[in-house]
Image (tube, rainbow over all chains, first blue to last red):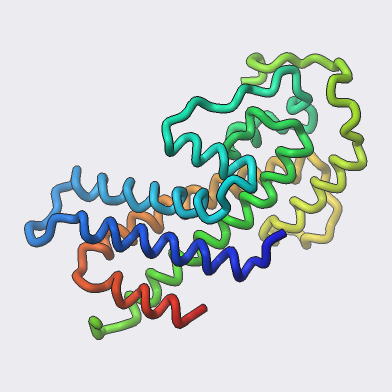
Amino acid sequence: MKNPNTLKKKLASRFLKAMKKLKYKMSPSPPASIAEKKRRHRAVRAAAYASMASAVGPRRAWSRALLRKMKGRKRARRNPGNMNTRFGLNHLCDIVPGGEAMDSCSLLNETAHYIKCLVAQVQIMREILHSSSSSSTIL
Amino acid sequence: MSSRRSRSRHSGSSRITDDQINDLVSKLQQLLPEMHSRRSDKKSATKVLQETCNYIRSLHREVDDLSERLSELLENADTTQADLIRSLIMQ
């Protein structure tokens, strides 16, 4: 599995690039309406998942599923007659991207990787927030 | 929800052994945040999966909350430039 630091750096650089793009698209001065604030919120959230999916690329089933979703492609075929009802995996396959098409082993594997990426993404977002709020100077 | 999937016990994927599943489940347990019990305590597979679902949902909520705060941050001029440089230095 990839070195976690490499992954984090990749996630961070992609996410920051996406944030910059959003920044430039934003209309300045007038205070944003509530609808505009919601739109921005959704845009940042989409950027978070998009950076995760593109940083991992096609290497993982969950990231492939997210990338398909972003490109508006059809979902992968549901895995018919799978054993996901064992152990109560039926909730997990709805939560992990692409989970409905996976067999039990793949689902558990993919879940582990998905969690690691989510955790890294959350750390990055927190770090950006903290570094901004702690500084008083603007470069 | 379970009615969507057939509860068939046919052995279509019987080559996946219980041991493999248990091994993967215990790997998942390692990823869970320590809460009320030590991570090394052996938990039932069902419990681990339940907690895994809850953990992922809470991570999704965190991403959502942090996204909102970051979107408010974006409104302040030049912040993202500073973050970019600072974050790259932090690596």
